Image: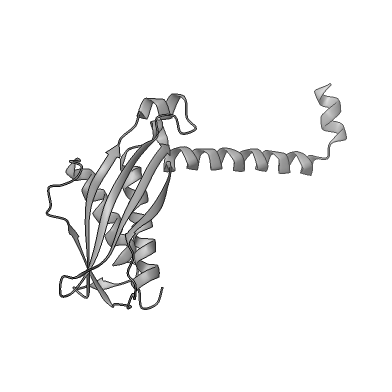
Length: 181
């Protein structure tokens, strides 16, 4: 029977079907290796009159109020911020605007739940409090940015939530304060 089908279906259709299967497998592999997550922003105090700035400083908030998390996760957050804001032509390193961050709440979720059950079972999240201050120290905007991890390679690392939060923070800061967003 299969020989009969191969004789009826032209060979170029089979090659297209094989390509489609290969592309589907590649997409699924990228999804598993890359990790799944999302982010959202909640403005606590929006800047009533944002002014574009050329330079930005990024600092961990020295306050001890908030969630105590592994320093490697905070390092992931800060390095992602630097890559998105300073290294990608958004701002130069400086002090026109200072971004201070701290983790205020979070839940790593269940990595095994994400791996075995998927579809947001075992979802992990982190809420980062972001304060943006002018050079004189006046806080002009405060926002809470939530990053989540819903899956990924072997269930997805909790670091994905920190990366998602950093990328969302960078998006909002560029949109609000970059000279050329």
